[in-house]
Length: 190
Image 1 (spheres, rainbow, N blue to C red):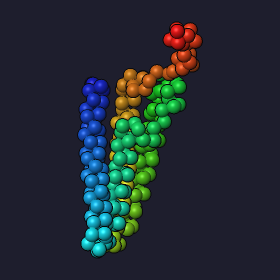
Image 2 (tube, helix red, strand yellow):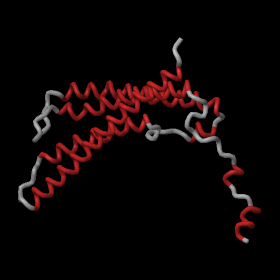
Image 3 (cartoon, rainbow, N blue to C red):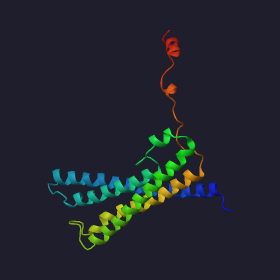
Image 4 (spheres, rainbow, N blue to C red):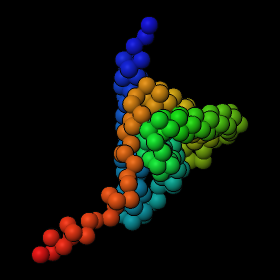
């Protein structure tokens, strides 16, 4: 029989590793974006010769940064996160609401990956002006992001099913905790 928490721990490590790689790629694209815009400004105002390829490359970098970072956000539970409703539910129900949320995100990732792959195939024969690479390259980050969203959703579902019911959500806040005690306030003021 397989030790589920051990499997979950190993899957979490793998997902963390994949998310870290995506973050590094996004960071590298951001550095490239800033450097190319620096070259654009230098070329335009100092050399009086605007490098026209910068716009096309920057669009490719922005697409890569956006989609890879969105997938990492699903892994880190900071993107498309719906924590209000689960936070109000008892711990037994939170687990199943989380499974439903990540199953929905899995479906979204699947639709995104399939349609983006169709877009890659449809536009592969065209060329990106000034860069002379296939236009389909712009849709590859969207395809990869859809697959990563699916992968990270499976990891989050596994964590929700095998972890404690509270997982990483704070306990439900009672109304009395939100309002300060009037007697305590009087003591603090005196």
